[in-house]
Image 1 (cartoon, helix red, strand yellow):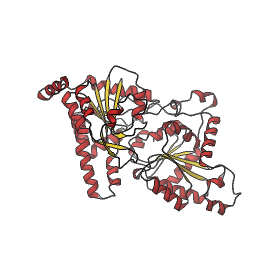
Image 2 (cartoon, helix red, strand yellow):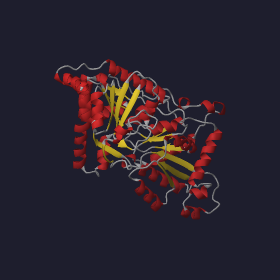
Image 3 (cartoon, rainbow, N blue to C red):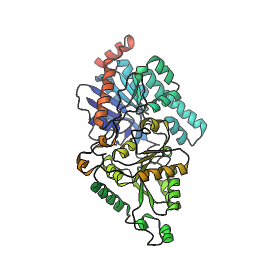
Image 4 (cartoon, helix red, strand yellow):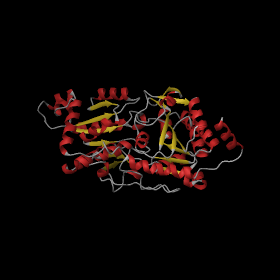
Length: 459
């Protein structure tokens, strides 16, 4: 299958859409994907097409640029080339132009939703109700309306988010009543070749490398200068306990919740706990300033490549997530694949995917309670990390750490069982099956619009 991605943000980074495309080896069909971000470098992509979009600085993701208008090349590509599927990733301002042309030509479209825009509008509008309402109205008109009116399929990484997203837009009952087969869950996984458990020797090596990178050799170095002076130079010689969070440093991620829990844990045992933050975002400077003012034991590693993450996962003691705005939680799956216990808040998406008997290393807490978060982290630390048996370490992959929860997405049924796969190759196969179901049931358009579309394509 040929994937051609048109990004609305630039520069591009690796993510699930890129991994899904790398895993596809079926040349039978052509798929044009107009995406909200990030095909990987190895993807068969038209980078010139992405660069030619009318782009502006992205106010929500520092360092990226966002397309606000489709380029002539994109419109020409949609009009003149033969595509079996067009996959449109939301949020994107390219919804109406793209879907108008695919409707004109009778090309099946797959619309997938990946951002909880209600939370984004509230957080980024400064909690000002009129601005929030205006933003939600604009998103409904520019994204939700064209996606549900013109899209052949509407999907999301989790069933619970898809239902809530469409329900908040007032469109769920309409789709369930008229086109229930159009509701799908996007299959998702991790790169099982790198996110995997390893033997104790490699875990020790990863941990030593991370401690060296953080400049930590003992508890005295893990503590802030004032804490060292208070405890004395010979208080303890054991290694610190490393908390890890991999996320965008943005308002919707609630990183401050981790700071409160860390402050309480550090006051009970000074210098023993340290939070490692991986990621960048608009709040990084303010968070660094808060850390300096409160003398919190926090290390910022910045934005890292996907291939650099597995050793860091394996080197830490617990993974902590505080956001309830996730549509899936790919970093949680990565942490579990590396054998790391996970602490996360109670919410619909996590309840569907991770808070099941299949995941014994997931510990939930009630959002808003710092004490509950500290207790959940304590339970996870008592459980501890688990390395792969030495004899299996060489062949251990994500599938050895994760239960197989992959389910076929039957039309009209949004199961709570989850849609997790051992590898991107397995997830890709499921995605290709969804594409084929759309292509085989292509809507036959007739009348003036279809005739005009065929005439334009022949020009």
